[in-house]
Image 1 (cartoon, helix red, strand yellow):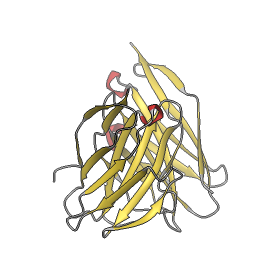
Image 2 (cartoon, rainbow over the protein chains, first blue to last red; image 1 turned 90 degrees about the vertical axis):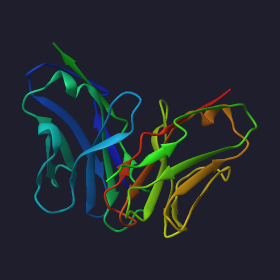
Image 3 (cartoon, chains in turn brown, orange; image 1 turned 120 degrees about the horizontal axis):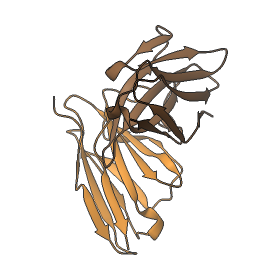
Length: 115
Length: 113
C-alpha cells in the first residue's frame, strides 16, 4: 500500500526566506510523486511531478523538489518566498504499477508567509 | 485548452436526498477520477473512469456511484445523503488511466443539512 506523510500541518516563513515543505512516501514499487497547491475555494493546481527521470524536478512559480530514494522523501523548496505563495500544499503519490487507489494524498501543509 | 469544469459549483441538499455532480474533462483526456475533500479525512479517492468503464474504486459505500459517457464527461451520484457527505468533491482528468498526471477542476461544494 502507498502512503504519504507531510511533516508540519502549518509552516510559517518570512517573505524572501527559503520555503521547505517536507514529504515522505511509502510505496512498495517505484512511485510517481506530485506536488499540488490549493488556494482558498479552488481546486488543486499541479506544481511539479516526478516520474523517474531526473531526481531534481523543477516546477512552476519557482518551486522545485528532489526525489531521494534512500530517504523516501520528495521535499518541496523555493529559494525566496512571496506573499502569493500562501496556500495549502499537498504531496501525492501513485505507484507506477497502476492506479488501483488513485492518487494518495498527504494531509497537506498550510504555508503562511509573514511580511 | 479549457481546463476541467465542474457543475454546479455549490449545492445544498437535505439528508436523505440524492445528488448528481457533473465533470467535463480537458479535451482529449479519456480518464476521469473523483475525490472527496473534507477537513477531517483530507483528500480521498472515490473512483476512476476510463473509456466509460470504472477502473478503480476507493473505500466508499455503495451510495457513491458514477458513470462516464462516450465524450468522456463524467457524473457522480450520491444517494441517501448523510450529514457526513458534506465536502468538496473534486474531479480530475488525465490523458490515460493509472499513473498519468491528473489535472483538477475547481470542485463542487456540497452541503448536506
